[in-house]
Length: 246
Length: 246
Image (tube, rainbow over all chains, first blue to last red; front, side):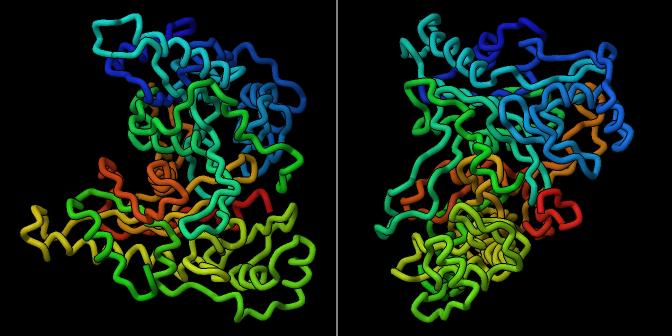
């Protein structure tokens, strides 16, 4: 997959039986590649700050510079890890910048500029493919397809990464249970379920990190697929005012 | 489900086609109920600390006392939320203590004392059920069944809860990719994947919070099912020495 490739066309070709109510979980990296969100380290000139951090943490100063360029705030720098708030408001290691599976040596892949917009574009394109291929067996004039763009994030108190949604369209990203009763009629403790993150995590179970499979089709989750694009993964960000750990 | 009930027998009865390589994800609450891990608030005498916290956060002081009793450390108390490290080393709201879906008014359900041991017991019992019911169509003398005990945890920088594994047996809780190459032969950035947490999250997608469905059968994840019990969800705890946010 290269910059400018038609990602929805590639997904539709790989999933000819895509149907109304399906959710497509797309790895962030392939979205970034298509959108040209890469930087060649050879063209990066590190600042004093990047040089100092790189020296302290034994990292490539050019990579550190790319991470800083993608960050709104460096939240923690310790134990060889840079925990950043990205310009989108996500808190993750290295601001989501990655050197593995990038398709080239010395190439850093960045997060999409607006992952929710990326998800909306993929969704809009996939939605019309039922109509444009009447002989495919798809009976819908306009399919409702949920799209999640996923990335692997660490967690402060648990080891290992899990995939979360950094972009979404046509998916109920947060299922709201506030005020709803439990099976005994008592108000539920759990208020909101991060459905889009759970879809991303479920999708990650069926691929390996070295398999080069960027897209997973989730079937049976139609109760989370919405008519509208919805608020996207931006709705999953905890605002600074509610943040107890910074 | 009540204290002393035979939970594996209930699971086996509900899933007569359980087979080798299946993963059973069991909600923490039903495990706690079977194990009698409940406290009646009427029998709780709050301490000065609980009374002060309850007053500050407009909570029931008896519930706060139960939360403190379950906690090794109160990590944060702010915005009406008590973030605790449980005696097992999990960091979560209210030390996992819950008043909803408890089966009675004024009854708090606590986390199992040793959720990994609970998972091992369920696994051991389920493993022999292929043998004991020869007419069930199950062909295994000893089935390899993965067991995950799940609970809903919040995240410091994302809204909504996702289900995670607080107990596990017979599941590769962390998939280790350290040192393994990516599709281009470059070392992967991602080091360990929290498989057990992703199994818990996937399972949560197929039930509603008010449905009273405590167990989900995950089929197709046999590559994560192990011969041995393994280290359990204890392996997912980040040690204090690696904690950047306390």
